[in-house]
Image (cartoon, rainbow, N blue to C red):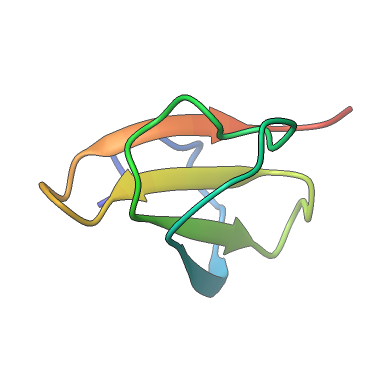
Length: 63
């Protein structure tokens, strides 16, 4: 699902499910529940995909 939105060469290492967030969470105003996709090349890059409709929601990264 995230291949169309992410840089080529990134490999998925882990997928987690989030069902709620606190007011300081980086994903606090997006669709919940969602999957968080983690990548091998950069542990600070995360992609978020809605469980409800399967649509790509957002990408987060820290430099």
